[in-house]
Length: 312
Image 1: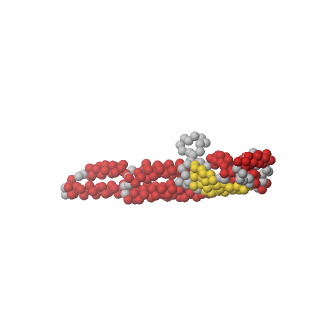
Image 2: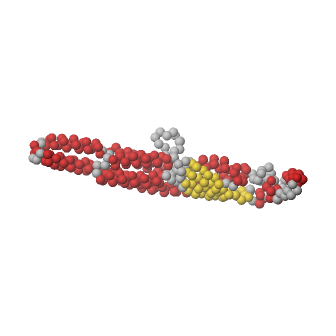
């Protein structure tokens, strides 16, 4: 599966004996597939086939399809129907018996009415085939654009992920030093507190008692600021992100074999989980360095989340 952006444009033109069809398809980001058709009334019958074709290729996005057509002279010049002309003449004579000023129909109206059993002279099957072919070609053009933009977005997110990994590594490396500094600060505070409460009392406490007290307080502090689990989960999320962005595989856990997931939705869920870990890291911050790291993580995750809003 390929990473695709939901923002793209494609157009195409097809020709046949009946005439030519020009079609444009535009797509922007949306949580669901939302399709709008701008079709001439004469080709409204093709909407069902066009909608089915779109649903086979797209899963998300706000899509607009614009279609125009031009008929060939041979197709437009429908032969006048003798039976229709006689019927119109009879009805016109009856109308003029009551309303003498009733005007005669124009030649264009008579030609349009002689559409070989079709009210506007169109062959629905032929024009539907032309319209679907134009959509096929326009979708191929748009999908190529979506894939190029998707790869650009994926690369930007991978760069952010590399920066997040650097932050995680830095925090892991800083934690032993933070605990060591806290232990030293704790020992100093204990000495200062004892001296303030009982000058000279510090000398009456044995080294073992002081060491045990410091070890107890340090242990409690270590438990309170331990972020190893959060960092490990962030690493796991980064590995999953790398997998999704490089393979386009949005399956999670034990997803049914062959089931196609939405990469964009999977990424959105993943960033929510990463943001939760960053918040926990900030709440456990043992120093200014970890607090800054948590802020950097949240900024990087938000940058990726904004990019992922355009991923199908």
